[in-house]
Amino acid sequence: MRLLMEERTVENGKVENLGDVPSPIDLRQMADAAEWAAVAMEKRPWRVEFFGRFAHELAGACRVLELGSGPGFLARHLLERLPQLRLELFDFSEAMHQLARERLGVLAERADFRLGSFREADWARGLPLYDAVITHQAAHEVRHKRHLPTLHRQARSLLRPGAPYLMCDHYAGGDGMANDQLYATVEEQEAALRQAGFGDVALLMRQGGLAFFRAV
Ligand SMILES: C[S@@+](CC[C@H](N)C(=O)[O-])C[C@H]1O[C@@H](n2cnc3c(N)ncnc32)[C@H](O)[C@@H]1O
Image 1 (cartoon, rainbow, N blue to C red):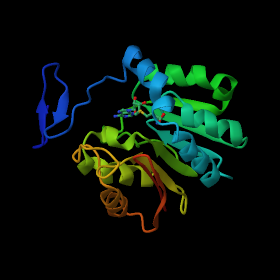
Image 2 (image 1 turned 90 degrees about the vertical axis):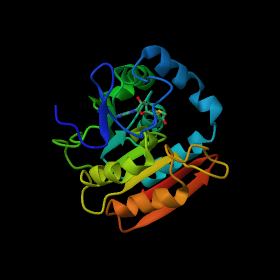
Image 3 (image 1 turned 120 degrees about the vertical axis):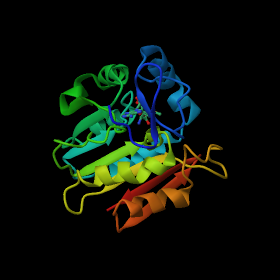
Image 4 (image 1 turned 60 degrees about the vertical axis):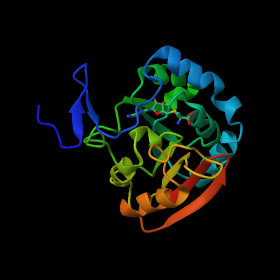
């Protein structure tokens, strides 16, 4: 296997980027996924306010891709409120998809579950174009802020002309996160979106360590 300069192989043959920030938990394991899901809304009850803004922004959208969809909190909020919506849930954790299916119940009839990692170079290949690509509290899972422009560029490639990319994530600094390698500052988040080719970038909300951008 040919490795890029930044890469190294680790014990199990997996390739990791040097300088990336390893995750202390493995959200592909049901125990870790379920534990994350059990406390997510309690830990940050204001997440629901962000969900409300997603719903507002998506009024009229029919086909939407959610990256790092996790246990389906945002998906449920959206599918309950937007009857025209069909959601594609993209996550690398089958455990998270299982939790999302349970959370969605009959709403899962309007959801498609795709297993994949947005850290893979070709994750977007073969996907159709969407009325929006959305992501909540997951973009930092690229495991270093320097990978954000690549993720955003790949998301942009999946948008119909004029369709929005709605990106909400933790930020570094101030009342946000301490790790300034894993997380970008709000200014760096905006710069990463512009670097990915988005011309119209607006900060819609910032609260409790989360910043929500609309990029077109
Ligand atoms: C912090 S959780 C957020 C879940 C959900 N968006 C929410 O806010 O409730 C991050 C999610 O990203 C997923 N994830 C982590 N790394 C990923 C990757 N490389 N590709 C796709 N999904 C990933 C995890 O499985 C998890 O579901």
